[in-house]
Image (tube, rainbow, N blue to C red; front, side, top):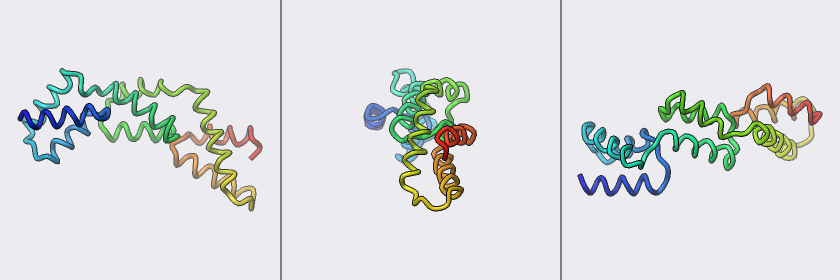
Length: 149
């Protein structure tokens, strides 16, 4: 048990983890469900895992580094079994001005990548790309209209 605790402490200290990540790792190491529950309780008590802290760091990282939109971030957090309340709170890490600025940057970047063929086709490709990153259609079209694309 001490060896497993040492390994999982290192695993959690290396990078912020959520309960699901830790549980999956313990499952991968073939730890019984009773011991997994005990270890997760211990890790929470010692501050090695904290769902709220994980969610806030996750949101900041995926938005600022990967340029993901709210929809994609929210879906990923839900897939990791993060409670709705924590998901809503963690979304506050994204400022509205930064969000719109990022949409604008993604739109302009994609416009440069697309061969200037048919105007409608360019707009469609941009919308497909930016919605795929998890941004809301209404905000994308608003930015496209502002940029006359």
